[in-house]
Length: 233
Image (cartoon, rainbow, N blue to C red; front, side, top):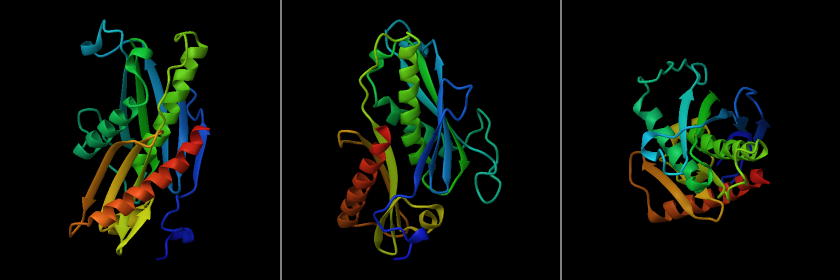
């Protein structure tokens, strides 16, 4: 099948990082995956939610948003309290994924808040947010060590994510918007650096998909995410 820029069915879009994209953040980067561009900024707060107070454990949480001109038609700006169900579902996914990276008892009683803001949306915004957010989070923890707010760098489990789908009967890696909007199956995979799955979301559009298709998508996702882990080097 023909894909944009003649990509193979098992090929990622071009990926790049721009570090310290927001000087006012404790850590930040801009991740570009093809036409999808997401700013990932980390703010460190020297407090935790009430349920963690006096436990010695920290917290990692995430917020996600699409800027109004991120899509081909203006995306209505969302405000706190007025976010859509989709937005809440995505930011909960990001937060769950990022909390897999580190033992919360190793980061002290502080909250690391990861803001993922989509500048340009061309498919895979939630998976790009997880991949970029994890790298920004690592940078924030490194800075806490440099600033002597942490005695040592916590042991981290790398995390990355990618989308996979079935298009005209063919499993394909890293869907752009045009592919995603016409796919028979759409799936998002989150994996840890040691090859274990953190979360898998897969949905059929129209008719159910076979176990063979699911295994093929899983194989493609594992290949793509292992390539994304090169960013950790």
